[in-house]
Length: 541
Image (tube, rainbow, N blue to C red):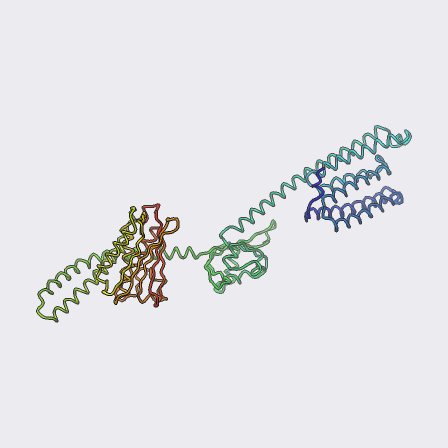
């Protein structure tokens, strides 16, 4: 026999089974001896030795159970001792004319408790061998007169046959029932594991509450949404986790009964209110009584953000359509006014007229710039990928900035060009527009001159590149930093709020990132990170 069988480590399940074996066998043997004495008039003094042995060995079992961790061996030892003791009782009292062979049945059944897999079959086989050995011993050592008193060989054989059949049937049945029990237990354990896995890993928060509406279980999603752990919410009333002050108690009761869904605010422990959709379900038992209740709640922040984006997109679409119409209708009159004013300026007769006409030309140019911004906002198109040298693109932007009207006399424009060409796959025209928008904003932030610097920094694997555009202007107010990429948001008196919005759209359409850092002392720095290879060509701004 494998010695590992006798060296099992501490096992709570085996400990309980051996403990039950000890208790049940003592009760069963006591009842059997009592019934034998009261019903069959078997004198107890005939079994004093066996009674003393059983109770003494039981004390030994208790001591071993407390001191030993080899519970499988202890169970095997008990069953072995029981079979030997019962065989002795049967041999002493008689294997045919006494009731004690029935004790083998008890041992067969009890062996299933300790060894559910093969205990019944093995114990039944050993019991049959021991009982037949007792019958053979009876025939070999008893007189023919005693055999005739028992009914003769045929009756003895028949009684032995009945007991053997019973032992085998009980062993088979015990093993069969034990197998079914193990399979069902395994199925239940597997179902429990699957349920537990689902509960732990679903993104929906799940709370189980008892009849008093106190939380008894919370899955990981619920704990994350509430920024809590099991100790924080175990046993508390579920309404303390949600803002239900505006909900009538009758409405809450109806929601539990109808399993409906409502929108509430979850009270997170980090002081954040999280909008959630909450549904309620009653779990009933076989008698239709409510055993417990389940509360499911899901985070609505992303949904509300998407709804807000959808509304924003619809609003921008409407504005874009209106802007395109207005820009077109205003553009033609502005061209006429500009041409007429310039013609009149050449024929002005005094300085006052010249000054007024110059103001008209300047304001017309400003309006033209605004119309141009609106047109760039409304001309949404798919990106067209080409492979080009980013060094050359930035150099073109630098030249355009240097020759722009906003370029002051005391401006220092630096481009930290890479030593070698750096090719990327992107939409060259759109990126030029994005960099130019940031550069023009920087020039407007430094009307009296300053420093504008552009730096390229490739990643180690050359799978992306960072474009850093910094200026020494007055910076962006801290309260405005989170809104500078919003459409029509501007901190300038003459700005349209379109340029940075379009710039962000261009960068995002290239699967890039854009961020900004600004302070009055250090100026403003834009960080743009672009992948070197865009794997799509149908992305729209």
